[in-house]
Length: 146
Image (cartoon, rainbow, N blue to C red; front, side):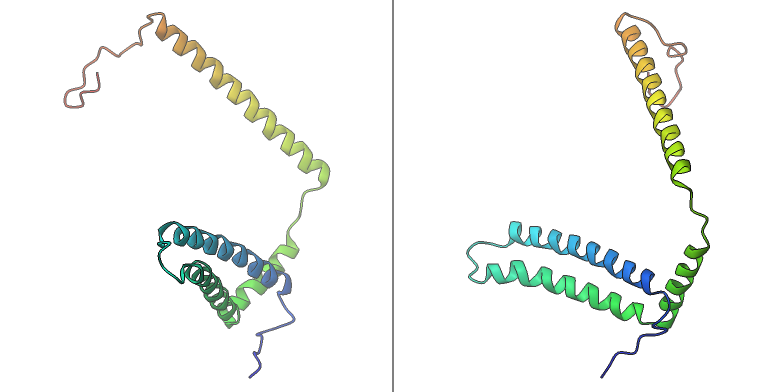
């Protein structure tokens, strides 16, 4: 029995991208399961190697089959088709705008990190010299903070 793909000519790139993304997530999960099995399955079990490799393969296959089934449903396919059509309408930044914005963000982060570092050095140095912090002598009943 052949599988009928709902609106097969539409949303192709989003469907492929979704399948690749889910495959990567499924591979990471299968690798995690493989690591757990390698750690917790006893070496005394004769078929340990089959458990360590078959169970992650089944996890991967089940996830991919589930996603394949879900992507064939009209509601999910319509969503992916609409997503692709909306992505075609997006006004993407030019390379110059992207580089300029990236430089502004990096410079801002570096300056903010330097400022926080200097304030931290000033405050920690002052506290080690015996500076007092204002309002720390105030007792707040019930909290026991000071």
